[in-house]
Length: 166
Image (cartoon, rainbow, N blue to C red; front, side, top):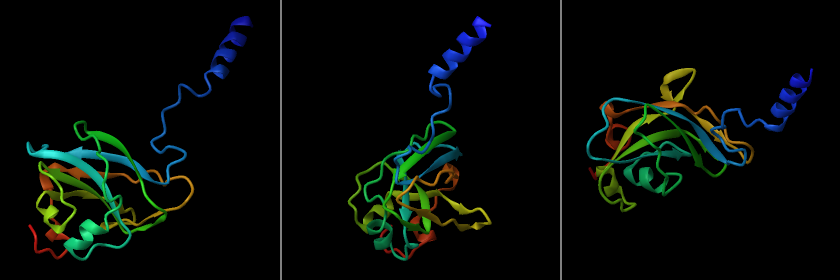
């Protein structure tokens, strides 16, 4: 009986310490999820990041100027799976995309499209041929915004928007 009581006290004292760490911090206003990586990482890889767009970009200018966050953070890409989280202002986002960046410096102009490729994007769970829409509120971040990054199928911006800079 004493052993059972001792075990119960130890478990109660752990405060959930043995539970997995949540991907989304409780205070995060933004979104989070898991990226699954496939394909061969190009030698020229400098970075992978998540970008979100309130409206689907129509031009290269939109692609750069309307990206949220404007200066994105990195996602670790050397394992087959990575958790990510990104702070975003409350809004409805019509395109959430993983962006591969080639080595080189970004200028925050449409010329950046020469260094950036679409590596994957969140898809509508009901129709995976379409981009998924995500609503970010002032409350807890929507989790499970999961998608695949395919290093063997990096796509230029011109596959999605009208651009003159390549």
